[in-house]
Amino acid sequence: MQNSEDLLSGVTDVPLSSTGRKQCLKLRDFFKKYKVEKVFSSPLSRAVESASIIFPNNEILIEKKLIEFDYGEYEGIPRTYDDYIMRQWNTNPGEITFPGGKSIKSHAKEVFDGLLSIAQSNKVNSIVCVSHRTTIRLIVAQILQLDFNYFRKIPCSNCGITLINYNEKQGFQLESINMEQNYLFSEERKYGD
Image (cartoon, rainbow, N blue to C red; front, side):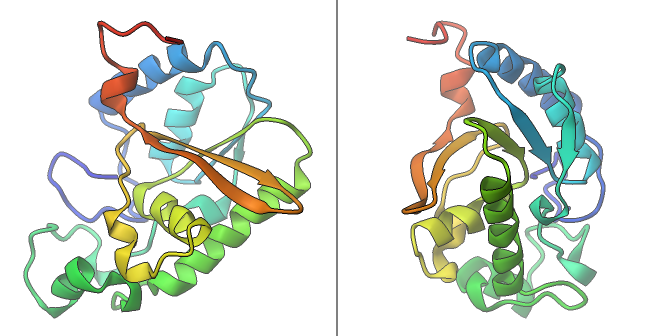
């Protein structure tokens, strides 16, 4: 989640902003036309609150593996901080392990395994997972079999919707990526057009 101070927030449990709440209310209107059977959320409060606002009639199921990436000692550091680790994060993030945090490869495996477990153990038609930017990008990178050094090039906006289908024969397939909030929240556009 990119916050107003543009800090690496990762697993730091920063609250949902007032802008985030407004975006979630608009997403709630968007999702009213869909029958969402199960909602899973990262355990971080900003994700849980987002899920609760968007899906007020659903039980919010906490899935630890949907959590954001752990930046370790870099939690709370400005994204513009200039040192070797941040230069690597901006150029070759697939090989990085933040001091006191996780490696991108281990986080990618954990989140993908978590999503696979959700898909295989819930025999329903529609599941929503509320998660975080790095986590979502790493899931998409694995579905598309991208080198992790390129995962940060995958678009992922706050309150963007990425649609993934799953079946046991073919696994995960990406149907749409990062349906932009500008598209969803346009005052001129009617939902469903």
